[in-house]
Amino acid sequence: YGSNGIRYWASSSSIGNDIKIDNDRLKMGYRLINKYKNAVRFCELQKENGIESTTLPIYHTRWNEVKLEILNHLEGFEIDKALSKLHEFLWYELCDFWIEQSKTTHTYAGIKLILEDMKPILGIFFKELD
Image 1 (cartoon, rainbow, N blue to C red):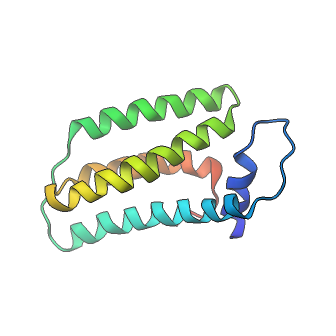
Image 2 (cartoon, rainbow, N blue to C red; image 1 turned 180 degrees about the vertical axis):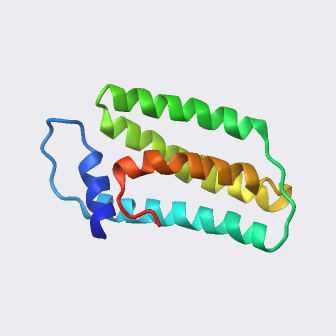
């Protein structure tokens, strides 16, 4: 699962706890970055295909709330909680709901901006983002 799988596994436990290598967590790290890359590709393909897009302010408001929570966890050295929040938002909210919704509402431009804003935070946990 490469370095992303290992970084995800290592970041998914509280500081100071011993953890066994867990293939499911290694796989999840690999899959999470794959999900991120596919979301970026989706937005780029929508633009390349000439589909007009709008942005919904609620997307940015929600992302800013989540980002603040993630950054607060990082400041408190709660790496596992920050990663969990990022995973939950990226997987279930942004990809499973917003991207599916954007297929009919054409709101991919706002999602693309959030994905770009998310990249530096993902870089804390993962090495290979491109």
